[in-house]
Length: 392
Image 1 (cartoon, rainbow, N blue to C red):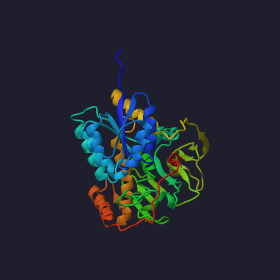
Image 2 (image 1 turned 120 degrees about the vertical axis):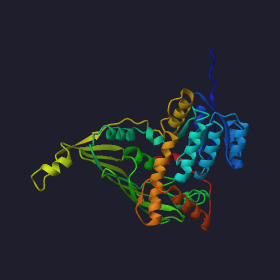
Image 3 (image 1 turned 45 degrees about the vertical axis):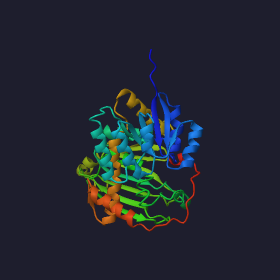
Image 4 (image 1 turned 180 degrees about the horizontal axis):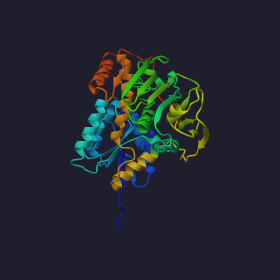
């Protein structure tokens, strides 16, 4: 019986997340870490010696010299687009960290390159690191919405302000929290998972009003506090409130439908279930101050209790091996990015924007901010904290 050779994977970018991925890959069945790549020579050499794999400073050189089946891209955001496109053109499978890109224009370039490459490599896999879709509580909420347990949805409000970050965090790299280096702040760095989950649950809104404060709490040039209001074509409204400058913060998701209210906070999922549709009740009950009878139910769920990245890498490996569709298709990274870009565009323009947004208008605005930036950080320091504590 012929033994199946392990998939040869490389990690590009050995920073906070990449350092986790290079540890995970060698432990996963059916895969081997074949190479690593980082522009920091000292970092690349150190990991090369520890892991006993070749290290490269330039991803193109690595792609030329290392025989690879797939790559995991965990570089700063702007680099996701050119690296992914280069890999697609060579028929190399791609798992990209969030966000898919800085702008929807770049995301569309990646998706177009992927679709073009599939003409030559029909089994090419493109996946994104949306590991929170593997969490049991989010999966339970998704199933309850899809099953119609709440009936017609009328409001969704997510207050996600427990992303508290100190100034020391922002000082851990010259690229971080700058228009030129990162392309955005809390929406692009901390909230891509939340924005993805929001659109996964409810789809994209029709209109967006966004209010973003630049460097309100920190010495940075990007947004660190955001409030957004969404309007859906079916009449549902939404709210998204986030910041890295609030302590103690809140992580509370409220979903209201005609059949009741679903709340997830502090690990508890509560469904206040109406005995009948509130929309029917308010139209038909003869009493002026009547309330819809309801019962409060705590909803159970199962959760693996882990950060979840290795599960996505496992799915990536399985998709390459078997040809199954990835659980977290890379092309879906566009939707959450669209939501974040639309919030910022609305704030920049001081007006409501409709989706899909004008890709060029937003991308050109970010390019202008990066080009004209004169922002200087007082200092930069190396990161030493355990970033697994930030996964929520």
